[in-house]
Amino acid sequence: MNMQEIIRQTRAHFCLDCGKCTAVCPVNRFDPGFSPRLIVQKALSNEGGAYDDARIWSCVGCNMCTVRCNYNVSYVEMIRHLRMLSRENGTELVYSHGGVTESVMHMMGKDDIKQDRSGWLPADIQVKSPGDTAFFVGCAPYFDTIFKDLNVKLTDGTIGAMRLLNMAGIPFDLLDNERCCGHDLLLAGDSNGFVALGRNNVEELGARGIRKIITSCPECYYTLKVDYPRYVDGWNVEVIHITEVPEIFKLKGAAMKKIRAAFHDSCKLGRHFKMYDGTRNLLTSLAGAELCEMENNRENSLCCGASPWMFCGSVNKQIQDERLRQADATGADYMVTSCPKCQIHLTCAGMSGDGKYAGIKIVDLYHLAAQSLAQKDG
Image (tube, rainbow, N blue to C red; front, side, top):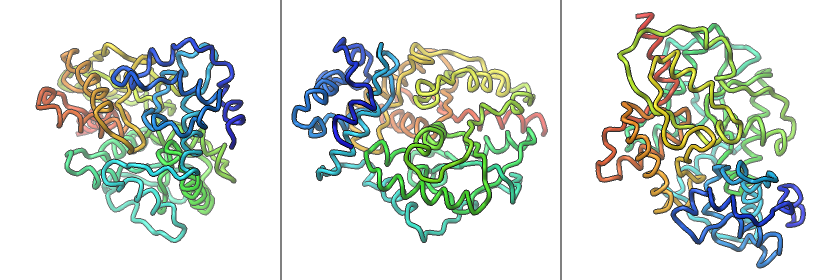
């Protein structure tokens, strides 16, 4: 895609140069040299190709800029395409964590790979196979191993979501050879790697006769619902988020010991889809927690500071530190999130923050809700 097509698709020619995008950008708050407005301006003038600007890799994709834009310029989409052009022109990238996450995604994109996708599954989870509905797990099982040093168990949230579906009587199958959805590869401009993952997922779903996917991961939800129809041939599957399943809200949990919880909105489920109430309703009605809203919440929620496993530096850590400070200021017992990557990044930041946020317990929403139901049944 050339620059003119990028400008047309992202509506960049509507930019009024007002600077609202830069004013709300979390990266700009700690790196004044980064400006969404200036990158758009550079793209419009085609100065230096725009994709040569190293700062295109600093964007965390939070979508705050687009939410504030009067003309809905799709800045995150522009960044993604500029990154594609940059990669095509030979830019060498720096991946965090030694590039292990990127390597895992590329391995899953190979046609002949075979995985053990259910070895971690507890015996009490009921799977209906064959069936036309699948639960899309995502990368939580891999993250558990990669980020073992953080003492996070991302599959607890995935298992919690599946237990909610079981208790609500919603049947689902699991895919033996499910691949990563490819969210991070596409955001990093790796369109070939993304399409390889998508193609394999299409083949797996087709072989199993799957027509509907339920997922609890916000990034999987966005990628499968928005990006797959645009980039992956043969994609014809209904995609729903678990909070769009009305039956789970009819469940009644036990009266847990009263806890106060600060809820952290993920960027994908929040600003990209404007889905704020379902997660909060699960937290207050099913998990029985008292909701403590942070200073920035709902559409104004701060990003966890994550990039697609790239260039995780001091700016990212400062964004995360600010979010932890806001959670701490509520006096809540827990910081609750529905996104595995938010849990990883905020946990990591809390551990590296000289112990000042050691009292903040970061937990998964679906794990907490399922615990409440388990107490009732027990």
